[in-house]
Image (cartoon, rainbow, N blue to C red; front, side):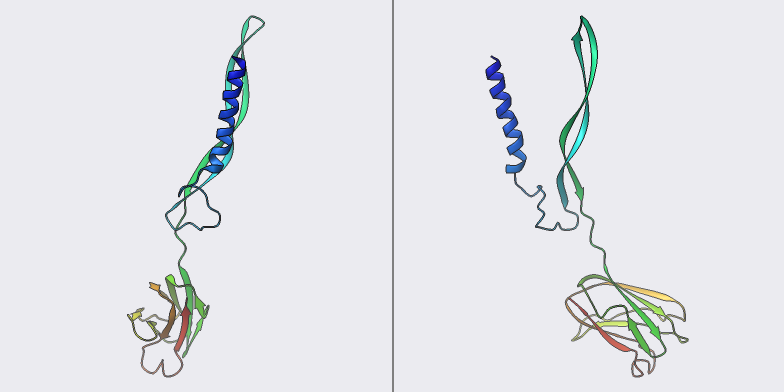
Length: 175
């Protein structure tokens, strides 16, 4: 009987060891494939669990406390990626960009007016597309535009009279 119990526990132990390694599916952690936003990413962690047993010793019940290591599956939701950011400093008849290129996707463009005159910012994909703009921004003020970029070049300009002709016209690349 003891031999049968030993063989059963041995097979059960091998099944537990090989089980998680052999299992595969969309919910298993794959370090090569990055997870998309909102998708669950799971991994195995070691936790300790308190086990309390009552045993007979010397004719009396005795409380025995042990700590046992247990593998626990931990899942978390992958947060969405932060939007790409582009800072645009406007001064008298010029723009300074924080970067000339950024990744395509969700984008925030922030106009920071450092000049003495009011400025605005218009954005349009080179070769056509929707034109986005900030309202007129006074000296020392800021405005933001949030939109989705696709790979390509985008033109930035100030639409106030003669500002674009005097140098407030530039481009950046998304991709």
